[in-house]
Image 1 (cartoon, helix red, strand yellow):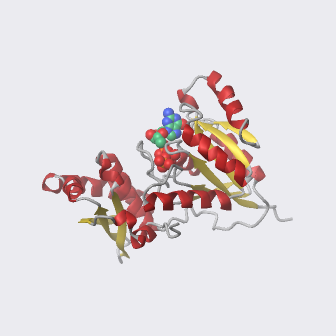
Image 2 (cartoon, rainbow, N blue to C red):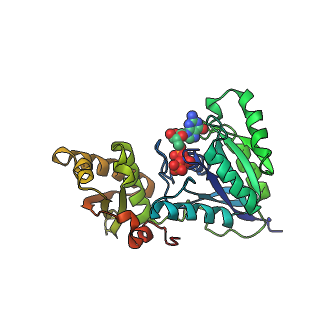
Image 3 (cartoon, rainbow, N blue to C red):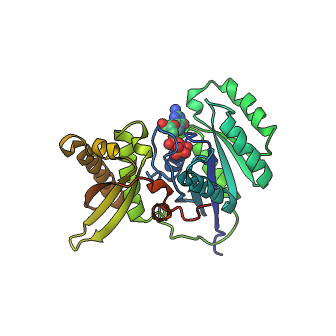
Amino acid sequence: MAETTRCGFAALVGAPNAGKSTLLNRMTGAKLSIVSPKAQTTRFRVLGILMREHTQILLVDTPGIFRPRRKLDRAMVAAAWTGSDDADITLLLVDAKSGLTEAVAEIIDRLAKAGRKIWLVLNKTDLVTPEVLLPLTAAITEKLIVEHVFMVSARSGSGVDDLLDRLAENLPEGPYLYPEDDLTDLPDRLLAAELVREQIFMQTHEEVPYGATVETESYKERPDGSVRIDATIYVSRAGHKAILIGERGQKIRQIGERARKQLSALLERPCHLFLNVKERSGWDEERARLRAIGLDDVP
Ligand SMILES: Nc1nc2c(ncn2[C@@H]2O[C@H](COP(=O)(O)OP(=O)(O)OP(=O)(O)O)[C@@H](O)[C@H]2O)c(=O)[nH]1
């Protein structure tokens, strides 16, 4: 008799910097979503696909939820909530060290109204003493009905296996939606742009990374098995362009070099990456740019 299979979506919802991307990467065992110590680095949903026994778990990473001001921010927030609405189980990720902040309280209010099936995941337990976890859980469950509570450290991996086992048991029965060896539905060209953006976050400071967006202009597979990728970095201010390029082009070379190495490793083939920096004030208000980075339903 054929084995019963399960397949379903689990959305990761949380305040900026709760550790969603780190957890997603830990769960899938691959570097799918970009991780950076700066808040609001995730701009669109990334799907991590992972197999656990006879269950295919589809993980949706969402941007941190915060009060939107710019059109870009509003689109990010809308994308975050769509992720949660589509999911079978919503994992509310809370940074145990920061605790029940105002941002967390707002998310809780919204989740309470939506009536979703929620699992509370307290993250960064490596940073706190165990005594803070129970009162924090109590404070949250007073406002929101949650089905299960997990204590994890996305960084060390502690508690993550248990979370995965429980997810695998609880997702609905059904056929797999993706091939078993797929890792993500993130197209390679979007992955390339994300890796460049991650390097901008790591190698520049203050508003520069927030004012920059990256688009893959062309993605060509060559007969020798390598890929040539041309990407444009759009910046909203002239000053930022100079910073990104750096003295004698040193900064942009370093950004390109590191992104290229990671991309080659992920795609398992040699990559040639060409970067171009363009100034485009107000790009973050433009619909076409938002669409190019995967945010099309701009409210
Ligand atoms: N000590 C510790 N740090 C963690 C843990 N999980 C994440 N971090 C750190 O917290 C910071 C934010 O992590 P991200 O995974 O980028 O957070 P995010 O929720 O995806 O953030 P946004 O993309 O801004 O929404 C990074 O510096 C991580 O290294 C953890 O379990 N323990």
